[in-house]
Length: 153
Image (cartoon, rainbow, N blue to C red):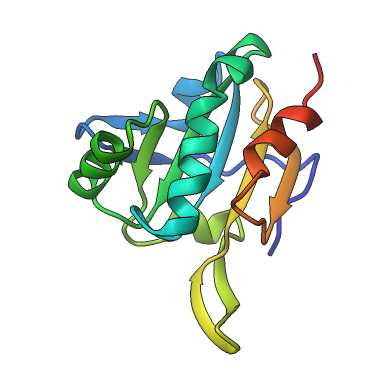
């Protein structure tokens, strides 16, 4: 099931790279960009994380915080953040339950074969917890800029 503008964002509580827990409702004092990506330190995921990190101040000026979610462990996220000098919050969805709730886990094509995995997806969530925009099957390169340009304000 894919989420669309107007749908209520599924709430979640996940562990961050430093081991603390973050809940979506704790972040809703601002608008939130939640993006799902397959794996730390892989080429596409690194490009996407670096792009969101580079644009973090531009997103903040528009009132948004950025959260990246993958099935990787908090320790793997720590290493990814340090190695790539990332500025965004990364959360661990090891059982893929949050990704599933957002329609960001399922069947996808990889090297010409159908596989189960994380579907690169991004959600723009308002302070009211309602999805403003959803993007599925995105291309990593340039995606952060497209999301930024699509925002109001």
